[in-house]
Image 1 (tube, rainbow, N blue to C red):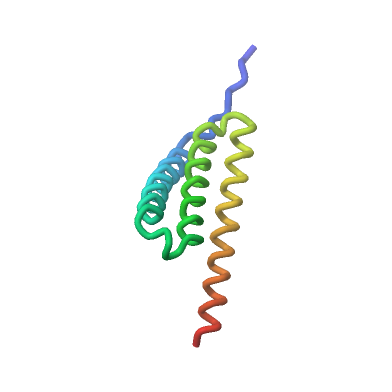
Image 2 (cartoon, rainbow, N blue to C red):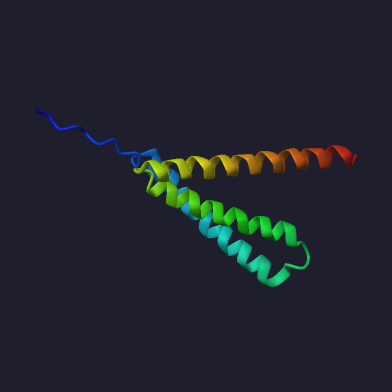
Length: 102
């Protein structure tokens, strides 16, 4: 009798995705740390959102690394959906601001 083969999510493109998210997590963390430390009073909301993005990238990286378990797989999808929503909202807001400034 043959044993079932365990499906690996971390192969090929999945490894590249984890590496990209790890780089983005490192960059976002560094950027937000420096921005908050040096210029937080200039734009507290923007720099706070940058820190939130860093946390989401870290969470997404960890979740993608450990996506073999059902809980981490769900966390990965939630983090990626949250990121997509934030990017879409930011793009919509930027488009709206561009349209209002001729």
